[in-house]
Each structure stands twice: as C-alpha cells, then as structure tokens.
Image 1 (cartoon, rainbow, N blue to C red):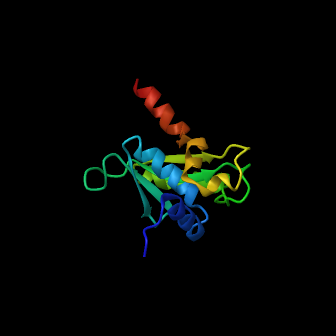
Image 2 (image 1 turned 90 degrees about the vertical axis):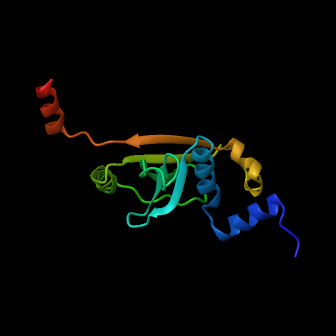
Image 3 (image 1 turned 120 degrees about the horizontal axis):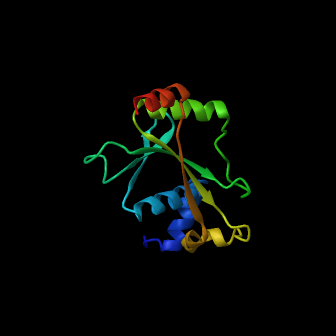
Length: 146
C-alpha cells in the first residue's frame, strides 16, 4: 500500500473528524509558539490543556476551549451561556489554571474546496481570549491591604 500524500491525509482526517481543521489550526498555532496542547487532558471537564514544555515538565498552564467563528457555516459551536462560562471559569480558577477561549476565524471568502488542502491554514486566524473572574469582595480586600 502506498503512503498517503499530505493532501490525501488531510482529506482523510477531515472525513474522520468534522472539527479536524479547527482543532489542527489551534494545535498548530500553539505548537508554533512553543506550547504543548494536550487534547482530552481535561476529559473530566471536556476541555483541552495547554502546557509550557509538556506534561512531564510543568503543570498545565491553562484550560483551552476551542470555538469557531459563528459566521462560518458547517462548524458546530459548543453551546455557551453565561452560566456555563461562569461555571467553567470557577472550576478553572479552583484548579489554578487560566481559562482561554481559542477562536478559529474563517475568512468569508473561504470555500469548501479551499478546505480540502492544508494550505487553508494560512488563511485562518486564531484569536486567544483569556477569561478571568472579578470578585468584588476579593478586590476590595486587596485594595485595603495596599
């Protein structure tokens, strides 16, 4: 059996996982910046984890929730409400992690044919948003200490 070409492998992975492009774009984004994303590491909470050099060297730095641009058809978004975001933020803070939303933004002129090649990655934009809880009583106590 002949080895698959890069494009054939790309198509095969897309057929196996409808979210492959978004997941790989996030993975590639973080790896290119020296981080080690670990999918399924937060299976208990349904999130991915981000490590500085890798699990053997450091504890996870942040919890990553991958989101795709709402305007891009065909990609299902994880349902999010203020309540679920607050709960995830609280859980993340309790385990001393940052909560990061990782948005994968698809350009409006990107066609389905464009997605059949890994070259589409250069057209995707990855935007990171760190979510933090502001607790008024804690903020007030810290101000009193100053």
